[in-house]
Amino acid sequence: MKRLIPILLALSLLLCLTACGGGKTETAPTAAPSGDAGETAADQVLHLVPANATTNLDILMNTSDEASLVVSGSVFEQLVTVNAEYQPIPELCTGWDVNEDATEYVYHLREGVKFHNGETMTADDVVASMNRWVDNVATARDFTGGAHFEKVDENTVRIVMPASCAYLNNLMGTYANRPIIVPASVIENIDDTGILTEFIGTGPYKIAEIKEDQFIRLEKFEDYQPYGTDGDFSGWGGYKHAYINTVVFDLISDESTVVSGLRSKRFHASSGIGYDSYDLFASDDEFNVTMSSAEMPMLIFNKAEGLASDAAFRRGIAAALNCDEILYGAYGSRDFYELNSSYMFPSQEAWYTDAGSEYYNQGDGEKAVELLKEAGYDFTTPFKLLVASDSADFYNMAVVIKSQLDAAGIPCEILTYDWSTFVQIRNNEPENYNAFITSFSPKTVPSMNLYLSSGWAGWCTDEHIQTELQRINASINMEEGVAIWRDLQEYMWSDYMPVVNFGIQNVFMISSAEVQDLGYFERITYVNAHF
Image (cartoon, rainbow, N blue to C red; front, side):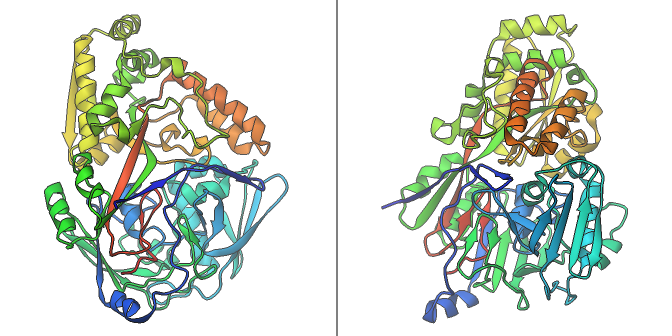
C-alpha cells in the first residue's frame, strides 16, 4: 500500500501568544533505535537533495528554504523556535519573562551549551547574535522599535522596547531571516559583505565540508547537549539526537538525476521533485510521499521605481490575471494547489479573511486595459517580470502571466536568471524589473510576511500599511489586532496592491521507506532520522 502522509496546518491560541498554521507528519523516535539497527544507522550516510543548490548558509541573511533545510535547527539553533502548532518554545534559553505591557522580555539561557569550535555559549554571544539580527532585518527593527538586546549577567539577556510587542517570540521562531546564535568571535570576523564565512553553531550537526555546486557534508557534533524531553520533538524544536553520523546534501540541478538516484537508493529524500514525477513515487511502496499545503506563490510588484511604482498600474495588471490558469500551468493538476485570496492560510483561523476577494482571480483583460489607460500607461513599454531559472514552477507561472498580458495587449518580457543572479537583481537593481515571483510559508502574525516589509525587495513603504502593521504588533488584545488586519487586507487588494497572491501550493517530499522519522514541517526535518 502506498504511504501518503497528509499534513494539516493547525491554529492554536494559547496563553497570550498567537500561533497558527503548520503541520507535522510524525513525531521523532521516543528513544534511540535499538540493537543492530541503531549501530548500522550510525555508520550509514543520509543523502538528501534540496530543491535548489545553495552554499550560502548564513540563514540570517539568506532566506532561501534550501539554506534553512541544511542548517536550521541542525547546525544553527535560536533562542526561540516553534513546535508543530507554531507555538514559540525555548531552544537556547530555558524560558522567558515578559512584563505586563510586553515591552520587556528577559531570556534565561541554557548553561554549558557548546559551540562547534569548543567555546561555551555566553550572554555575550547571544547579545551579539541577536543585535546582528535587529541591525540587518527590517522587520526585526520594526517589531523591536530598533531596541537592542543587552546582557543582564552571564546567563541572562533582555530587550526593552519603546512600544508593546506581543509577538516578538513568534517572530524569532518563524521569520525567514533566522536569528541564529553564533559565537561573538565569529561575528567580529564578518567582512564588508555582512555574510558569515564560518558556519559555527550549537546544533547536533556541524559543517564538515562544502564543495560548491557539488555537496555539503555534515557530521555529528559529539558535544551536543539535547534540550527538552527525550522523544518530544515537534515542528522545529524539542529533543534532538543525531542517530546518523553523516548527512550529505547532494546539490543536483537535473531532476532526472534526482529521480533515478532516489529509485536506485543513492539518495534518500528530496523535496525538489517535479509534479510530473509524483505518480512515479506515490504508487511505489518503497517510498513515502509527504504532502503539505505550505507555500503561497505570489507576484511581488517592485514599488520602488518603474511602471509598478504606480498603484493604479498594479491594479490593472492584477485585473488581467487568472490565478487558476497560472497555478494549473505551474503544477498541472488541481490536486497540487488551492485558490485562495487571503494573505494568510485558511487554517490560520484567527487571521484568515476573504476581505478584498472581489479583486482576486479576475482574469478580465478588458477591465485591465481600462485601469491601465486611467493610469496613463502607453501599452508599448514592456512589463518586465523577473524569475529564477532554477524554479521551474515559477518560470511556468511567468509564461502563463505573459500569455494573459499579451492577450490583453499588454507587452510582457520575462527576465530569466540563475538563482544567485536573480537574487542580486531582485535585491539591488529595482531599475531593471517591474515584478518577480516567489513563494512564502505560513507566518503566525500578518506583519511577519516578508513581502510587507519596507526594507525587502518589493519595498512596501506605504505609510498606511506600515502604521497598521505596527498597530497589530502592539495589540495585546487579539480581537483588536484581527480587526485591524481585516481592514488592511481589504485596503491592499482594493487600493495599494503590493502583491498578487495566486493561491496555495501543495508541496511534497519523496523519501525512501527505509529512513524512519524523517519529518516535514515546511521543509525536511532530519535531526532525529534513522535507518
